[in-house]
Length: 281
Image (cartoon, rainbow, N blue to C red; front, side, top):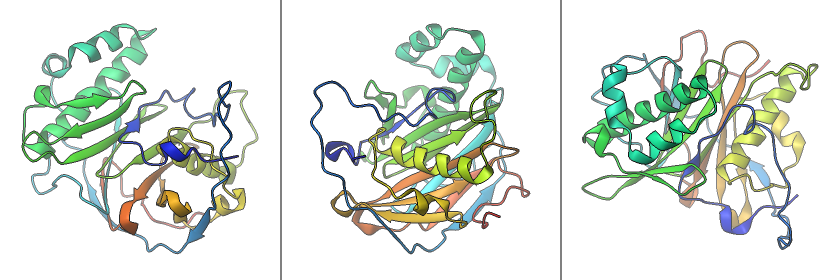
């Protein structure tokens, strides 16, 4: 399979449905030109420092907007909100309200609204502005990017769903999240190692806008929780396992522009029992 050359570093990231989006889709559109496979190789990457924060409705004042080499990860249940429901509703844009209205059922609608309210709360605190004033740019494929209202700095946001959980990633570089949730009748005998590999591969594909990547599958079987890949002219990417409870597996892929390594990961909402960076059995 090949790597889409013009989609290696998109401006922002994708919000996906937990069933549809976790399937690795590699179909090509009719008439799409073939692209030569990119040379991909792993390289040694040091494990980043993990800074864990409890999930509270008071944003930690000392956590600033992520800069190069930094990643923020949030995990919360669908019903969790930092403010009352009525206040959160006032933060949504007209477009977000319309998209929420078009969701096929109340559960998906509530999940979408919760994710957007929390995103606006996070970005509002990072940029020191009102959540309703946050300019969330969406390119039509649900790739989110927010620009600082004063200095123009940008951050990318990716949202993923897994069972009762919503996971949000925030970084200054392109990133992609993937959550693999066991589904009845779908690969019932899939091993934890296979699910972990699928999450890692999905995170890379999501970061690359689902561009098929010619990756040696064996490289994704590593027992370490962090790894890195060099996509030659398409840059370097850091892949990190995201601990989840039960049989759910997740991963995040982060671009490394100018070969900037991932050095710090701020996590919100993970209990001590689910530690980041531990080797997988």
